[in-house]
Length: 102
Image 1 (cartoon, helix red, strand yellow):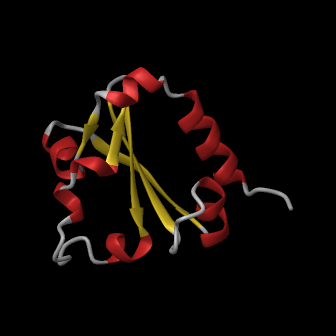
Image 2 (image 1 turned 90 degrees about the horizontal axis):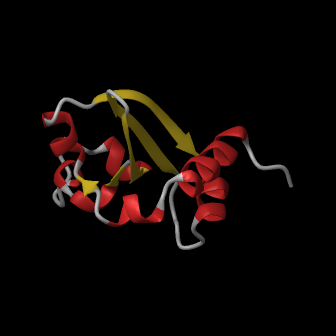
């Protein structure tokens, strides 16, 4: 089975990130937007691609790529959370575990 271009890009991006950089640099989407990061792209991974990255995923995944100068952040959301981001009871917009900053 051939992986999609998005999946390959995601794997290359995530694996290319320094583990030390990921360890201490997590933020919420709201915090990043407040710091001046701009949303540069959103991508949706199919359920099959999401499971290829992490077999416990049960929904498609939305990747949100942000940039502020040379800094890049990638936030991940389950598709249902992303669709309800403004009204979700467990506010995913302010959850710091959603975004990796490098």
